[in-house]
Length: 252
Image (cartoon, rainbow, N blue to C red; front, side, top):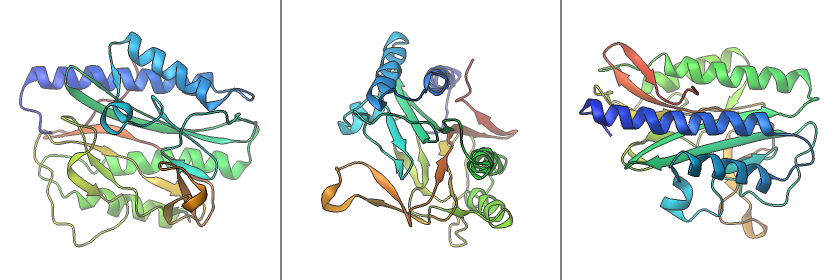
């Protein structure tokens, strides 16, 4: 999606605000003993109340309104009977559609009490995302995002999951440009055109470099860290402008 009118931008901002508010409310609601299904139902209620439709359900038939991944699960976790416990690391990914426009956001939440290492991982996961976002602007290279995040991860002794990439969003949940790396890829020569809409969503880890399915014992959706290690994801939907990044998935 490339923004072509004020109306289009207004619709993107509206759905961006809706998914951001939903994510913030879900994060606040997390408490030990609740199931991921109960947390997902809160997300569904908030999206529907705002007139929005869950994007993973709409586009892919995903069995939940939001993706909720706990600990070793790092993406596309199915809400269900799993009970959240103290010390868990919970990732929530909220994406939705309203008036023909999609937005996508996500964050990881540590359920107290957690170790200092996990607290730092969450803090630095946000820092890694914003490091990438600061590279955004019209006529700048897409690869600058992954180069900057990669330098941040290396400097702070983290790894990056390198098969879950950022992506275009707007007319659909996943669209061109695809495979926007949040790790260094020198061969990517693509340039951000003015008005381009896409996500920035690094997966920062204490050792994982890959996301893998659960094999024969798994479901068709949930991805796990490989090798197993605490991993966080933070995500915003952003527009590339002449003045730099415009983040549309902030609560308000």
